Amino acid sequence: MEKLDQLHVKAGKVHWMEYNLEKGDSITFYLTGNAVFGFSIVHVLNEADEDVFAMRQLHPLSAGMPGPLKVPVRDSLVVPQSGLYKVWFSNTSC
Image (cartoon, rainbow, N blue to C red; front, side, top):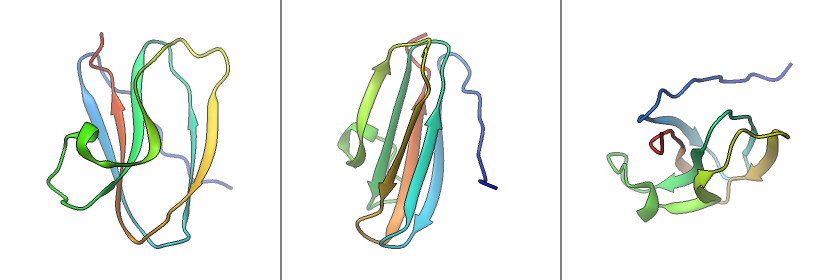
C-alpha cells in the first residue's frame, strides 16, 4: 500500500513538505485541485531558502495551475543527487 500525504492549503497560504532523499530515490505525486494553485518540487542547497523561484527545479514550476482539475495529475521523478527536497504548494492566487 502506498503512503500518501494529504493536505489542504487555505486561501492565501503556502505549504512546504520536506524530504531528505538519496540519489536514485523516486518521488511519486498525485495532484487534484478545485481552484488555481501552484506546485513544484525543488532541490534545496540552503535549508532556510523559501524562494521557490530561485531554487533548482526537479519538477517544472507551475505558479498558477488552472483548476479545478478534471483529470488528476500523477507523475514520478527520480532524484538525481542526494539532499533535501521540498515540495511547494501555493494557494496565494485566491
